[in-house]
Amino acid sequence: MNTPILNLPHTRPLIAKNNRNGGLLPKKVAILYTEEKREYFYTDEQFWTVEGSKKEAMDFEPYFKKLGIKTCYIAGNANMARNLQKEKPDMAINLVTTVKGYDYLGATVPSTLELLEIPYTGASILGFAIGCNKHLVYTLLQSHGIDVPPFQLMASSTTPLDPTLKFPLILKLNEEHSNVEITRESVVENEQQLRKRLRYLINKYEQDVLVSEFIDGREFACFIFQALNKKVYTIERQIHLPNNNTKHEFLDYDLCWGDQSTNPDHLKYAKYNDPLLNAIAKKAFEVAKMASYGKLDIRMDKNGKYYVIDANANCHFGPPEWLCEMTVTMKNQGVPFKELLKRLLQNTMREWGYCLS
Image: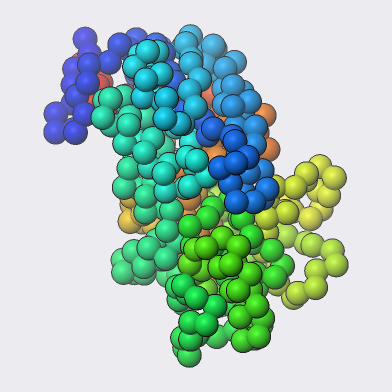
């Protein structure tokens, strides 16, 4: 018998079936993906981060078939609510990262799912919205005692620089993910370079820029999965760029989205585990209101101190066919994707109010 768990916010009766492990699996899952239209985006670089979203979503199909679960594929656009009501899925996998080219509009996807009382994976409304503003994330983390680099939000290329900030500095678009405009020019060594980069970013994207101290040292990607009792999986990025005109190594846009098969030595990954880093990641996950899963980018300075430099509440989540860091991390950690997916589905069902009695 399926019995609702008490004191949970969602109690929608779900059509579910038992599996051999005693958990619950939905009979039908909607996979929601980002609508890819070039006219929605300011630049090609933004568009390229979502190009092929529908095809990537359909890579889930064989894994759901193995679990005996039906699927439907729905774009995250104005027709999404109507299509969800038509398909009547038991739950949804939310892969939508942006709507009409605006990351913050992505929060309308969990909002719609909440209104329709459809369980879903990924960030909640609040978590998604918070994650769209780097300055807000830094402020929240800092207020909870989590170390972030010293920072300042700049709305103009003429905004005076906080005199306590020390060069080198790194500049990031405040409302962009996916390493958009993170290039070798993002790290500046002096006031002249700072003003030049600020003018370029603000004029091109018409949004604020987060300026923070660049943390020289090692770089890590931490993936937190709530479905596995908030388990943290970490890899170290080992970056070696030839002809680097700076003395700094970090993950830039080209390295993130380029074809790694042609230059495998430029970015390598190593398994990493530190209880202190795990504790920081778990706390940051909670403070940033993440859910289901999320990613944190962390750097360690030369004294061994960790700094959270970015938080992604709805990071790339997908099967081994995807060439993304989550896939690499899970492979390095020896976690089969089928098992990870099943646990995620089961946990989502339980969170929305159902277990076996």
